[in-house]
Image 1 (cartoon, protein in one colour):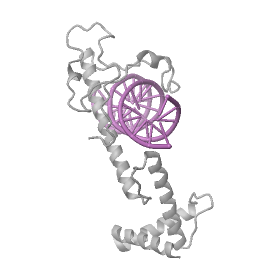
Image 2 (cartoon, helix red, strand yellow; image 1 turned 90 degrees about the vertical axis):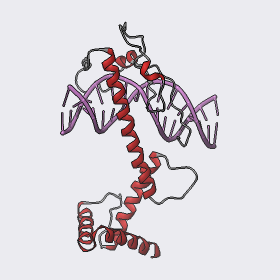
Image 3 (cartoon, chains in turn orange, blue, green; image 1 turned 120 degrees about the vertical axis):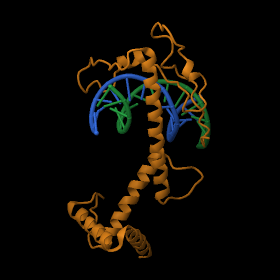
Image 4 (cartoon, chains in turn yellow, orange, purple; image 1 turned 180 degrees about the vertical axis):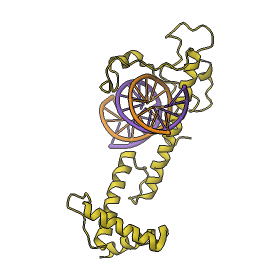
Length: 187
DNA sequence: TAGGCCATCTGGTCCT
DNA sequence: AGGACCAGATGGCCTA
């Protein structure tokens, strides 16, 4: 499935590893046993001790923050954890879809290798800057040397944008941008 | 083999 | 209270 053959991580000690507490009932590993797919595979690192030492963001509000206790039983907590993992996975998938859409939206030299996330963001930023420059250029304003639009140029840009939205709608704007781009390349 | 990139897990915090 | 968001940790895959 995964293009890069990212196999599911078999690894990492699981949340529900028996170790932490004397588990009265339930089979600790029952749910993670037969993951049909990555999404079902429940595994993860148990970093309890490590993390307590270097507790993230403890700077936030006082060090000894208590961990929120959800369901009381281990089984309940385990279930919540699995649900959270699933949601997080879905969230990351959505994020990756958005990255993919962005990749497709920005022009770049096609290679076999797909753009990494950082490359995608950097290219997108440059692309936006370039388009901004073009539009401001054509509308008589200009982008400051540092590339950061001033208030005036932002206002001008917004004005152009709104004008064309009113006149042509979004499709018209797209055509307009394409047209501008073409013009700038010709000149 | 080292380094880059990525997917996933995890627990803390924020938001509704 | 519960979900979303975030960032650290970990380990797998791939390439130079």
